[in-house]
Length: 96
Image: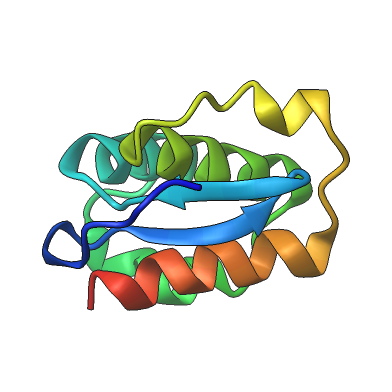
């Protein structure tokens, strides 16, 4: 099981059938801003309230990459919407 580094804002959550490490790094934040077409990160809270399914997958992929995980796991195993939302919420809370 991956061990999270709380000082880095990492969190380990169940996702795609296994524990996965997620982290909101600067690179992950930049990818999320690009996918959501945001000018800056201050618009994230409002925008997260209305994500499409493809946007949610892109956010998860960025957070997985930030945690050193392979985002291809999202294609390899089923991931439920509640599981996805909980994973994103946990990753964002860990860096707050």
